[in-house]
Amino acid sequence: MRKFQIRTAKNAHILNMTDEEFLQWADRRSFTVFHNWEQTDEYFELYMLYMKGKMQRDLETVYDIVSEKAKQGDEKAVRMFLQIHKDMAQLQKAMNRTQTKHEEVQEEDDLEI
Image (cartoon, rainbow, N blue to C red; front, side):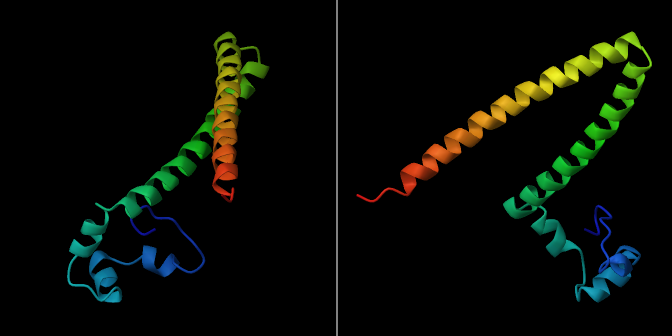
């Protein structure tokens, strides 16, 4: 959370610390343990969740801008707006197929022999 400056009610003081203050607070002499952790699968999964959320917020911002310009009659924005809707529909279909496959596998796992 400190690395990406993700603020919560409980960590604001940590985000404002210098590196030296943070190391003292974490009872560490160097950032080695943190750098090593950044090479783990756990970190990668958390990083991907962070990036997914960030991309969703960015997509929402872009969508709002394109939508507003399309409403004003901007031809390029109208094409982009329609393309975004088409892409989102395809993505939703793919997600539904993945969800259905996951549910089928889960049903098979619950069978008793």
